[in-house]
Length: 104
Image 1 (cartoon, one colour):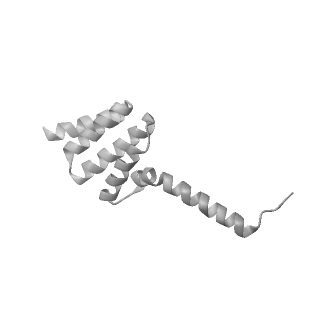
Image 2 (cartoon, rainbow, N blue to C red):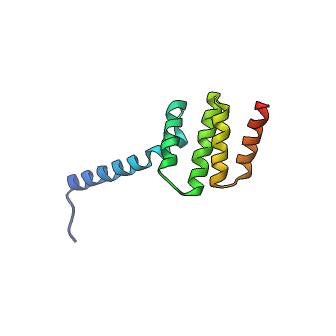
């Protein structure tokens, strides 16, 4: 069995982790970012990076929640609608309907 030198393995590992972090960053930032401006930007970027309905559903839901928290109710409602268009989920529908009631 041939052994790989430790420095070469370390460089390969760092490159692999950096590439993985870069590709997952918008999704991770959308899910975990506390700063609302950065979260909104990350969610918008994440929505462009995937076409999977189950991922888009939560990206738009998190975007809606960030807009709601920032007080941008109309944008929040639009993002909830996008979330429901990607994948229908009753809890998301209830959140959107509660927000719509607050605007009336």
